[in-house]
Amino acid sequence: MAQIKQNKMMEGTSGTIGNVTFSVRKGKTVSGPRRGPSKKPPTENQVAVQIKFERFLAYAQEAMSDPIKKLLYADAAKGGQTAYNAAFQDAARPPRILEINTSQYNGLVGDVIKLLVKDVVTVESVKVRILSAAGAELERGNAVVGKGNFWNYTATAANAALPGTRILVTATDLPGNITNAEEVV
Image (cartoon, rainbow, N blue to C red; front, side, top):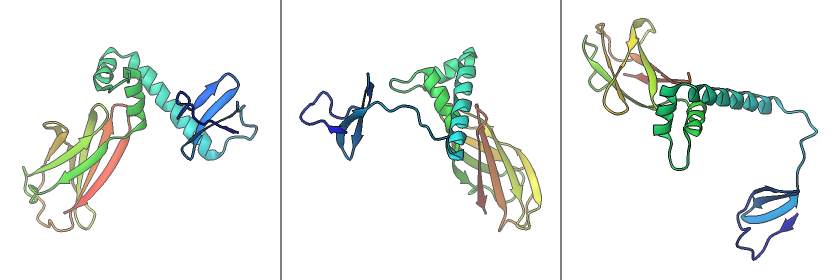
């Protein structure tokens, strides 16, 4: 491999031009012969990554054929991104449950649990299950969209034994990615 020195145009360059491949190693730009395909079969992990990548591509292509989704992703695209890039990113990143706020939940019917859930574009649904300290399901239902990235779940069953109660939250985004989180009261 050749090291490239005192050439500001090539500094930090990576990729292939013709039969020469450029890469950055330990902060220095180096060049070498173009690499051919690997002669070893892919590992199980590599195959798993390839399958996930194909799923992300398929979702992005499907999203671009749906005019409503295409507009959603075009609005979410940042910088030099396209709607396709944003759809691919959404498929690759599950929603994030950032907060389960139980400060207004006292085990009474009508109490509200606030949830902060973010995704690349929008979260499709947020489901809540409330379990007793012993693990019995007390109730389950859908949270409703609040302001910004907040969702609200209103309790429908009384819970007299509040300590140890488990709040289970499941968020699903447009591509179908699912994230689970739990909070113990």
